[in-house]
Amino acid sequence: MKTPEFSPGPVVKRTGQLYDNPEKKVDKIRLTIDGREIEADKGMNVLEAAHAAGIEIPSLCYLRHINEIGSCRVCLVEVEIKGARVLQASCAFPATEGLVVHTSSTRVRRVRKTMVELLLSDHHRECTTCIRDLNCELQNIADNLGIRNIKYTGEMKQLPIQNKNSFIVRDYNKCIKCRRCEAICSKVQEVNVYSAINRGYDTVIAPAFMQDLSQVACITCGQCVIACPTASLTEKECVDSVWEALEDPDKYVIVQTAPSIQVTLGEVFGYPVGTVVTGKLVAALRRLGFDKVFSTDFTADLTIMEEAHELLERLERGDKLPLLSSCSPGWVKFAEHFYPDFLENLSTCKSPHEMFGALTKTYFAGKQGLDPEKIVVVAIMPCTAKKFEASRPEMGTGSFKDVDWVLTTRELARMIRQAGINFCDLPDEDYDAPMGIASGAGAIFGSTGGVIEAAVRTAYYLTSGRELDVLDYEELRGFSGLKEAWVELKGRRIKVAIAHGTGNARILMDRLRAGEQFDYAEIMACPGGRRRSTDIRRQGT
Image 1 (tube, one colour):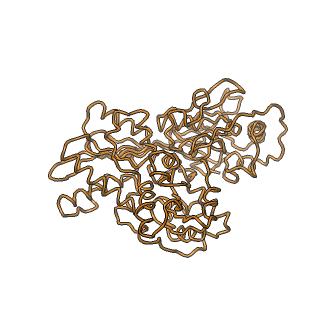
Image 2 (cartoon, one colour):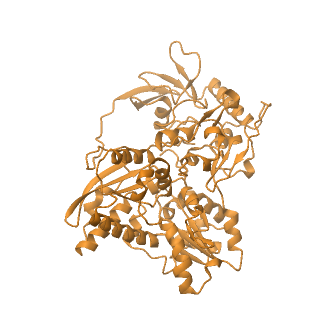
């Protein structure tokens, strides 16, 4: 099992133009691991060097460049070095020239097995009913080590499960104190929700005073969920509620899918990363019983049109610039907590999935002669923040919500398996009309930088009657953590920026507070934007 690696993405130079990070020549070293002489980059730790050579060392707490603290002690190895009498944590031990390492000696295997047994001795082992069954790093490592009995007995924690919010469930009884959640929240997102409370056996990694996530400055981005190696942090599941709606003959159940779901769902069913499975996704949703299958790309187009007009209006008035995108609910919540002085800069547009829900229960209901009270809108979305957004009281009209239920990719995959659908054998089918149709602008909306590119291109067309070649906007694409550029619009040069990950958003917002001028900015809460969501636990990327 490979170790997940998370990277916040590089931050480019802050000069108004996009710069690629220059490739640097990396010095090489040679060391011996398990009798093999291998070559590694200078500066790597032993764990990285081993993985680069195809030698697997299990670990639980390690996140590349983010959490390299050696706290779980599962990655222990034996090193032949003068004075080294104890085993070393490979994630924190530097790979050096001539080093000799043993990753699977009798001593290493015995100690590694003991460490995992100790973790399991205080772990609520509900594997068959656990939401992370067969997708749990602790479970996989225990199986690989051949652990069948836990010989350590004694006190076991009985801590409350926190699920008062609509987005994330926290089960402290399954926490192994790897501190991944704390690391990614503080070092990547820079929200700092988690920290260690108490000492020794009583230590918990939690928000201050062990409050529920709804009571602290959590932005609901769900990065802690994807970082967690167990089921201590999981998305708030609503599969049963969706099944109940589908089985109710009085309900007209409509589903919408975000652009990224058309790619990420394939990974769950064994397709190579990046495989587009749009046709099979639509076919699976029809077989689950949804009355209409639509694409959120439809309202992504509407969002682009609205933001383009709003940008032109603000440029004309010179009022409340820069215009800040409002498509990412995690970013919106981040702004509410940390940058309330910029709330009036946020676009007045709802996010595409909420806009879709509102249109479905007004425009579509009217055209089809349906009672909006009987329409149930289900959204398949890439992150837990969409669950929170759907629960906000302003996201609805009168007695009904715009979007009733939000499922992540993992939840949809569970429903497909529960229904006994062989996803890989499904035929390709098309979305229903008219709310399953989208333009190329709606399609690029699904990529980081797509909102700002599509809106600027649309604004350019609205003001000039001409289209610009895609190449003119390539510098707005890609996965750099923070990008900026100048573009021509309405006879003037405007400065735009793109930030993904709220750590990078904080850099940009601090520059705005300091007086630096921008005209338009797209901000996504998740590192990597929409394509790297909390839905899929990417191994080794």
